[in-house]
Image (cartoon, rainbow, N blue to C red):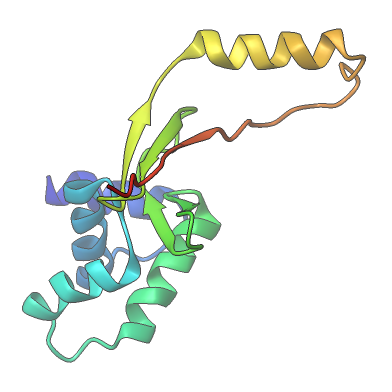
Length: 137
């Protein structure tokens, strides 16, 4: 697993430092997580690592395409390790994301855009996030 993560990081043009490898493994473990959550885990292995360093590593991962940013309904940034096309359900009560992989949904959206005369747009990606509202009782 260590060499696989090292290869992933290197393939995106970065040096595979122990800190980056550890942060990537935390992302793999949680799937969707915040910088605060990662920092909490990282501190156990690297007690002198600052939050700013963790955040900068995450931003570098975003810029290189290793992870994608997600935003909750309260605009908190999460990091998503899955970079292939998929969608999300965000649960406001648990503050968690769930992946939805549905190629038919993507095709439906593209067909809809074409039916509205927008086929000239070169759509690179479509982000759909369904939100499960917190219910007050």
